[in-house]
Amino acid sequence: MANTSFFEMAKDQSQVKAAIVAKYFFVWANVVLPTAMKQNCKIAYIDLFAGPGRYKDGTSSTPLKVLETAIANEKLSQCLVTLFNDRDSESVSSLKAEIERLPKIETLKHRPQVINEEVGSEIVKKFESMRLVPTLFFVDPWGYKGLSLGLINSVLHNWGCDCIFFFNYNRINMALTNDAVREHMEVLFGEERARVIREELEGLDPAEREVLIIERLSDALKDMGANFVLPFSFKNEHGNRTSHHLIFASKHFKGYEIMKGIMAHESSEKDQGVPSFEYSPATERFPTLFELTRPLDDLQHMLLIEYAGKSLTMHEIYENHNIGRRFIESNYKKVLAKMEADGKIEADPPRNKRPKRFGEATFGNGVVVTFPPIARKIQG
Image 1 (spheres, rainbow, N blue to C red):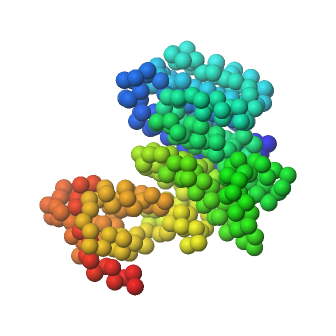
Image 2: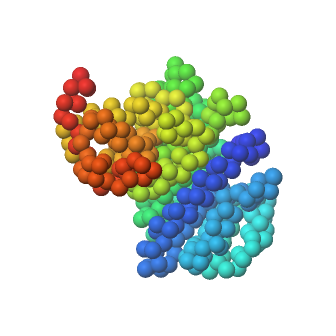
Image 3: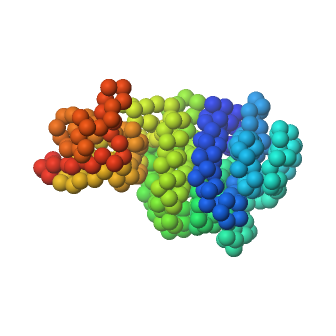
């Protein structure tokens, strides 16, 4: 029961996980709701490993937080369809009881459905045969049994659907080189990719193993169309090893941008205003995670090289450049403003013609930035 022991040991971490999912659910719901209301007025939240509803200290877990959010929002309360599942019958009974105790639960148009099933190929087939309404899919298994690319893709292939799953790094790290559970790793990474990973892991130290595994998982998700993948890591109680990763996968930049802002806020550290996302150390051997560990000091140099001789709006720069990197929108505005003040770029309109805030010229999304072509020489 890996998740159980994890939450008993690190209550703050389990609450951060629940907060990230609940916050994303609220923003995501408000994005897809207008379109859904023009159709059948249904959006969904699915949690196949829902648990008992509360932690041992009485704190609400993710299912209750989601339902509380829906109850508090009149439009959402009329459109949200929820499906909660757990293979443990005691957890199912507890969750049902906790849901019934929620104040004003009767105001939800669609009563929450709570079922008791083993997650496996049958559920994947069921989702694959359905055309889902916009759905936020949360997968939080105890270990890795039931977690598969097929399961994630069965939901993600539908419009407006995003997936968040809890990835038990310690268990999967051990399982990748354990022939007894080879099948589970092959459904998670893909048969050929799992084989290659096992070869690549030979001789790597623990930090390199972690970076490789998360990088290859990101590759697998991107191969099936989830072009926007964002991991958030959780350290153990000593802060010296990663125990879990919360992985977000979406086909849409908007979802990535929203989740990035939420994870940035929940990060335990910030360096020059750049959130840590609690990522593991990375090297240039693994580009996705390497980019996620670069400090703000590098951003200026990166922009001068990548956009040498080009003119783009601030928003175009941010949207094109931030994918796979830990920089957020405010980081780009701060760096571009400094580059303009230092005479390294030109901005239109210039700062003396832009609105001011706290005595400083703002750097709006529509400001056009022109980079000097000479910057290409820096690369050499």
